[in-house]
Structure formats: structure tokens, C-alpha cells
Length: 539
Image 1 (tube, rainbow, N blue to C red):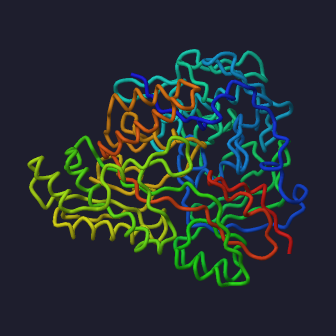
Image 2: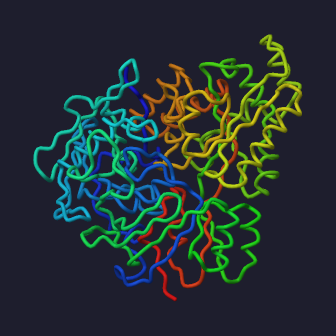
């Protein structure tokens, strides 16, 4: 059995994916606003939490925020762009649709001085797959080079990675996949680690990680602070402008708001409450900036057991789900209702939930349940996490409970758990319905579909639909933009009918920064990658 979860490029750019991807000569993703290290140290404040700094064990924004700055991948995507450029690789070229050859840049070193060679690249993939941490990304995103046994064990396909010399890595894909290079941009699946430092069968402690990115980790205390310093051995295009970057972690958005108001942090990014953002907009000492965003929030059903196994229950909940009320009540109108798991702006996006369910309607929901012979009220356990998604997550959970119970069709028990435990127990069946968020790994509609709909998705909710699997395979294997968009539309319609999850809202990428800060707005793009190297402070 093959796990077919793929990450793809935008339909409009797929045709160029057979070309080489070389180094960037653009300013979009290049070095910071000051000469390397000449800017003052600066402090980022956030309420995001870190799952792991070893890329083999993380698939979340809090972790990847640091990983993008500490590690290199073979290729990367600059800010406000969908183009692939070289990172550790000088070029990555498709010899044919199933063979991708990458040539490393000369003189690459890790921050400890060890040489970075093709052997490290191969080891990084082998190791991440071997550890197969359920909270990691490798076992979900590397379907083109892995096999999945009936018991769920994921292994690297024999002969999938070849290293003919120290500078060359050849990927032999098990099917035509002209988009595999986009998978290589995400550190959770493709960060390059030092084979002499990272064990093959276990994650490395967070404070001991070694990378080859523009910054290196000098101190780390979970939930408190990370300290990054310029990596003197870095020779790439993204040299940082500050000698040090401090990341301070806050448990409450109110504390983060006070910190940026008082100058205790220079930048506040993820997540401030909507009321805090509105208040800060009137403060002349700080700037509130928003870039295009593709952050989404959605609710996942457990579909292979419990009450969520009944499609009618899922559909009835979707029929009474009021996105406008959630946006207004929980988020003060700072987010937009989302009627597909794919947010607006992506090629092939379709508001399938709006087409199928229209406006919230209790009578229609009751009819769905009556037709299925399901007695009401239906008891469901709804899970949410209190810190990871900010203070409005509780407001959204309460609003959802109100909507479901006011319909008279559901009896809701809310349960909350902190993120580190939450992301484990929801996969184990702790809830019938639970809240999750998503930030794009790659600039394409598929990144909002294949990780969600194929064989239970990364959240392992038990959903399986052979038609959805086939459509993912079809759109992944073609460079025909119209054919891909048609497949995306069909996939979104299937999701609206089956309701393995319910999309809730889409939001912007917002940051708040103090005087003397430059480059913050350059990195507030839909990717939600906070590129430390673009940001400088000059008092």
C-alpha cells in the first residue's frame, strides 16, 4: 500500500518544474537589510509553541519558524513568490518526471564546521523516515520515495536516493511527480542535518541541534526563550542582518501585547487577540502590519468510529455551521468565512460548502438526521486547545457549542488540552470533532487537499475515499493547469459531501513592530515563514 500524500506547485507554474532551479538573484528572499551582523539584536515575541527543533519530529508553525532559520533545505521559496530557488543546492533538475538530480553548492558547512555533503542529505531523509514520528512531516509528505505497509509502517523505497559523489543527490521517484521539488522546500520533511550529530533512531534534544542555515542556536529553553546567533559558516544568499535574534515565548496574548507596547519585544507575531490588534492600531509607538494570509481554521471529524462515523451527523453539523457568527463573535470580524478547505486565491479553489449547504438551516439539518434515522440530540465530544491558537480559540469553541446546541439537534461536551498532548490524543480518538489550523507548506491548492483527504490525512481521522485518492494522483501527475483545477474542484465537492472536516475561516498574516525595525513587512506573506534574515533593527 502506497501513501499518496503529495505537495504540489501552483497550476500556473507547474509547467516550469522540469527546469533547473538555481540560486536566487532576486532581492525578495535575499540577505537582510543591513550587512551581515551589522544590525542590532532584536526580539521576537510569540505565543506559538514548539513541538521539536529536530525536524524529524515536527510539523507545526512554532517549530518551523525556527527551523527555516536554522537549517537549509535543497531548495526554497523566497518571500512573496511561488518560484523555487536554490538553497543548499546549486540546481535541481528533472532528468525525467521520475528522476530529480540536485547538485550541491561548493563549500557548504554546518555551524559546527562539519562539511555538508550529499551523504548528509541522504541521511537526513533516511533518518526522518526511520524515526517516523507521528508529529513529524516526513511520513506524510514523502510519498514519492516511501512505501507504507499494511500496519502503517513507512519505509524509504529501495534505491530511492542515490549519491554518486559528494556534491550530487539523485532522487528516484516511484511515479511521475514533477512537483517533488516543492516538497524539498519544507524543513519538516527536507531539512538537512549533520549525520555525525543526529542519531538515526531518535530525536536530538532541542538545545543540541546543529544546522547550516543563516543562524545557529546558542540557547534554548522550551516555553521561555530561544537565542539565535549568526552562523559564521553560512555562505548562502540569506545572511542575517542582526548578530543575534531572541525569540520569547508567551503563554497569553495579553502578555505579548504588553510586551510590544512596553518595548520588551521588537516584534509581536502570532498570536494577538483581535481586540489587542485593534487597540495597538491606535498606538503611535508601534506599527500594525498585515500581509496576505492563507492561515485557516477548521474542525476535523473522527470518521472511523464513534458518532462521527455517521455521514448524516457530519452533514447536519455542516448544515448549521455559521461561519459569519464565528468570524464576528470570536474574532471581531478580523477573519473571513471559509467555505472550502482551500482558501481563496489558489487556482482551482471552489466554495463547495456554500454551494452544498447554503446558509445555516436547522430544518434542513433535522431532515438530514431524520432521513438517516438518527435520534436527537446527538451527543458529541468537541476538542480544542487553549494556547496554541490564541485566545479566540476558546471563543470559537464556545460559539460552535452554542450553534450546535441551539439547533436542538446536538448535545456538546467541550474538552480542552494543551497542544503538546492535544496533537497526540486527537489522533487516538479522544474527540468526535476537534479544532485544527493550517499554514501552507507550499504555494498550491494541493497543499490544502492531499494532506487532508488521502488515507486519513496527517491528522489520522480514519477518512478514506478511493475517488479522492485517485483525483490526487491525477492532478499530481499532470502539468495541464485546466486538468488540475478540474480535479481540485471535484475534490472540494467530495469533501463537502463527505464532510471529513468543516472549514471555518481564513485569516491574514499580521505582525506588530516597534520603532527602528525594518524588513518585518517583507516577510509577512502567505507562506507564514518568518525570515529572520530579512529583519533588522537600527535605533
